[in-house]
Length: 61
Image 1 (cartoon, rainbow, N blue to C red):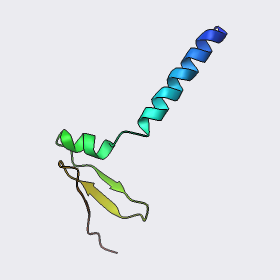
Image 2 (cartoon, one colour):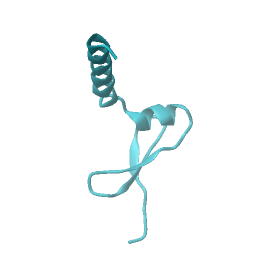
Image 3 (cartoon, rainbow, N blue to C red):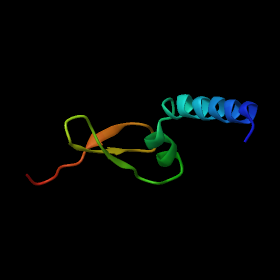
Image 4 (cartoon, rainbow, N blue to C red):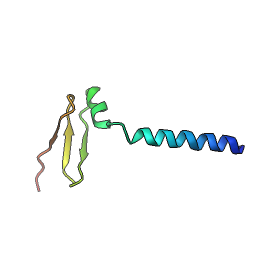
């Protein structure tokens, strides 16, 4: 690959990475009717609803 091609690919990859950090995947999935579940910074399971609200899922400890 030519140097200018490598530079262009690196710039594209950087732009994509920057945008990925800005996307709220939980909300996007909920808008499509998918109920996403994720872990918060404390390791608790969190459900994201269609309206964008979140709730902790009660799990046995």
